[in-house]
Image 1 (tube, rainbow, N blue to C red):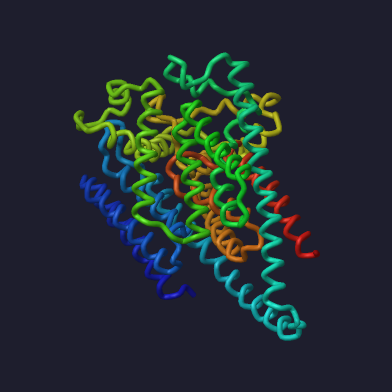
Image 2 (cartoon, rainbow, N blue to C red; image 1 turned 30 degrees about the vertical axis):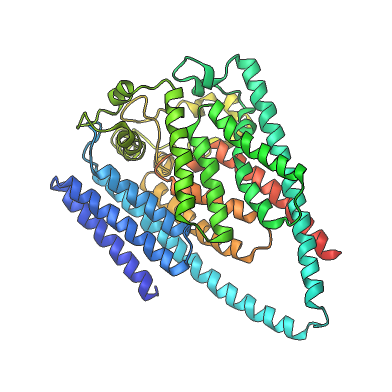
Length: 461
């Protein structure tokens, strides 16, 4: 049986979804959008109050997915169209099944945690209590020092690999996107296999947060390495004219910071906005996309809408429209090929079986190719695919949440941080059929093993 507060959450979600559906069907699209936006905000606050965690995965996903649906319901662009009933059902089931997966495994995790705590208490009662607080503190300091050293090694490795691969791509391709007159130069700056390492520098800021948390002794060399690593993590996305990579690097570090410190001030928010907004605008300009060009692409119903509203609106809303277009036009399901694309890409099998890349994207406009996290799951298996992926994501969310609470390995926060970004941008792309996602997760796993090995080693000393 669900707890009373969880039942209230389900009821509020189902009621708001039904109301928004009815309002949209009768043409009250603004009211439908407002209902979804208020529902998303309510669910986020509800989960935040339960956990005290600003980046609670359940709350983040509700804010992103349902909030994005609300923005899309406003229908501010001529590219928007009434959604099919199947589209509405998929969007509804996506969050509902996420909650079901989360609650099902959440119950099991709670039971396991209770048993584990009882066993731990019994063991502690029989342990020799001769170990002093000072000895325990000394062991903790030794463990942190070793972990900090290994994290610094990871930062140096990622920085060197990223810079080397960037220079290789620039030399082979003969241009750097920031200095190229070509409007879509960033799309062509890519050497297969190499670019994965080029963009991996975006993991450095989050690693730096872990390093600062663990280290106590600072030297000029360590400070300089950390500063250079983070400068590189910002410079390469800027040189590649990649707004997404820059925002990912900053957002990823912010999530890890909030998990470790659970503290944020308005001054920090304002300072981040003061830096990031101008950079975002400058990168937009550097892409050679002027306002008339963007307006011609977005086709807003109100032609005088400011571009700083139009652009983020379309980056959210049109992805839901692309999903609806796929529902309308998809002739047959691909039975796993789309979601398995990372396997074909990372192993090189896509060159042996080029047909795996031949499936078309169903989008409202050729230039607007961003998608939702559930696009490929529907492409593969229809409504069943959306249900299965949502259940898996909910299960993974609760497992990660319980895992990081143990704090045995600081790199576990990197897994949580990445998953938070993927759920927080659930309206943006098909994260889990993207090879880069799995490459970053593989790098994170390698770092987890490295840091975890050192942790065990220090325990034996």
